[in-house]
Length: 112
Length: 115
Image 1 (tube, one colour):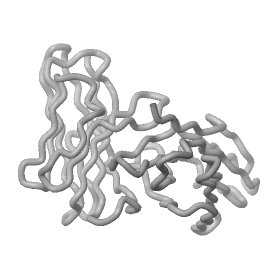
Image 2 (cartoon, rainbow over the protein chains, first blue to last red; image 1 turned 90 degrees about the horizontal axis):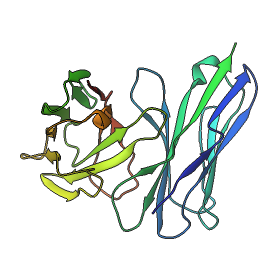
Image 3 (spheres, rainbow over the protein chains, first blue to last red; image 1 turned 180 degrees about the vertical axis):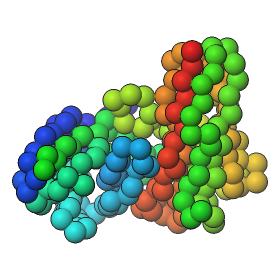
């Protein structure tokens, strides 16, 4: 059974704080690791697709790192803003299947 | 529209009824995926298509669930003899042809409630 775990489950921070979450995934048969942001009443939005060990991607104040050998990825948000409030999902894709295995998500609440 | 479109947005059905959920992917997208999301959980894979071919249906929870994409564009997820445990958000996603490192583009989902 392929298991993807995210921590923490939820997070409350003040505006301006920097924060990070973790995604753990199987280290064998790795193909890609996806990050999505899911705001309430909207559809999940793709943030990053990461494929190479040591990869680091950045989009504005959000960045992500990838370690495929130990099976984890970190998502960082610098200077959180209220509009960053959402559930952040990671999803693992193994090399022998086309499907994504999602974690349960980290719900971030940024207070003004 | 340019995005993935799902209909209906909300569906309420009585236990035992059949339901059909529709997904219109982004034009030209070859791959189409269905997920089921229970409250407080991440999306769980149900099935996926490449064009009209259903390549993986390992996530369908029972033989009451059936999906099709007969012309390689619009897809329908059908649930027969619905049960209360089928209540969930059903998400559809599509991605462009190519290697598996393409992001998936999601619709807004259909929220299904079985009474």
